[in-house]
Amino acid sequence: MAESDAEKQIAEGKEKRSPVGLLNANHRRVLASTLRRVELAAWRLEDQLGRSVSPELALTRFTNPLSAPQRAALLRLTQQVREAVMQLASDYCLDVAEDDLLSLIKAEFSLLWCDLEEVRPQKLRNYGTVNPQAHAVLGPRIERLIQLVLSINGVASGQQDPEL
Image 1: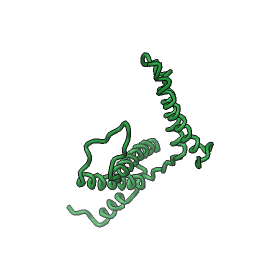
Image 2 (image 1 turned 180 degrees about the vertical axis):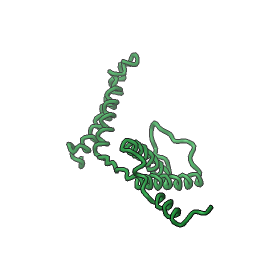
Image 3 (image 1 turned 45 degrees about the vertical axis):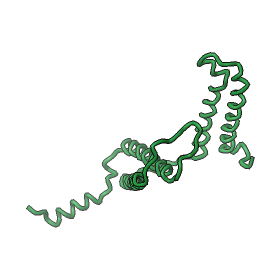
Image 4 (image 1 turned 30 degrees about the horizontal axis):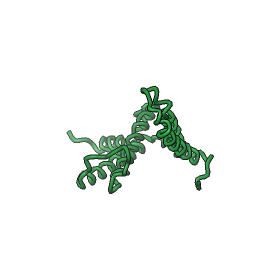
């Protein structure tokens, strides 16, 4: 039996209505948190794919480079992911989270400072006997890294002149 025009209009109206009411505040919070992680992962992937060459890092080597078709397909897919996230955020009226970039930088480099403090030669004794020469050779280099990390934190905190 065919649907009447009135039934079709009711069905279309239900499809057009926002699904916000389907989720409670906790559901929406978890959904938003997960979608933020997906969105940021897609953004990081796009950023990596946009580079023609991998960065030259001393301790990390990226292997298994992508073919041109793979790169193009991944770029298309990341765009689709970001569009899907945008649509879900709109449909469910999800709140936009704000991340204070300076706070993120300060937090990350504060943690790195703590980690670097733990690899000073005197702390490495916790992992076994340390060659006495390591204090003279490694110690100043770790100290230099610590100072650089603290400088980044200082600039981000506004406590150090960025022109230095």
